[in-house]
Length: 339
Ligand SMILES: [Zn+2]
Image (cartoon, rainbow, N blue to C red; front, side, top):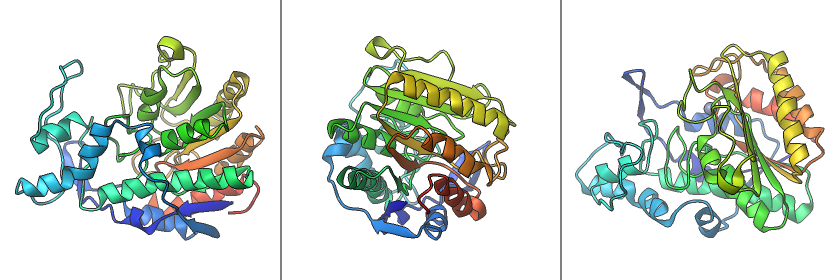
């Protein structure tokens, strides 16, 4: 399988995050990407498709914020990473505030997403990797391709960052695939955590189907999205499928749930699949609680591949860095074209 990546994605390096009441070293490290990259045989450098496909998903004011926040943080005399400490309660009226701290709060939903010196560049190139993999599929009628996206994207909404995510790579690729006439497009999210940003972006859109299998948000991040009764709104009712699973879920239960999601995608009439793949469903993941083993990943990939639908695989989470390359390689091997 052909993969896409750009070295500029490695420049993003926040130092710490707030977790369970204390500061921890930042979990979403560049080493994640280098470990995955070391396993990929045919990896190509991403091309630049510009800002327009990004603006087809994200609001212009959010992109302005993201691309200028670190400079504004430094102009305010701050050292370290830019991080908000005040967040607006849902329903507060929108205000056009200019102080960096007010902007950081307004455009994020948690304190896990600091902006460091090269964060914008890395996020931009992560999105370009998704677009490059998509373009490769379009140009060559390829059945699959892998975008080594880092930072990940599925927690980022149209105008907010969160959960290590800045730009929603899967959503950007899905919109572009739709625009290129490759659809109808479905997005399947199999990261351990619910893809709240992707859900929000397409929640009222009847033309893109979103399905997610994830840890029950009653007990796990991102808590406020991912519940079973969230099925879409307005014209998008019925095009959002959430399947929350309990902590401790193993392969047997996970595989039958995957079958349910794949059936729904098929019945809806999708012709192109964007797969948000997180390897944090692995039993050894330090921040997650499912029980999948390395040998389970190719079997899950085979089930997805059996749909016989062109599939763009977009990297999301996975934090057991020592096993990450092996798990991603195992997953990609299940698509049957080597890695
Ligand atoms: Zn995750």
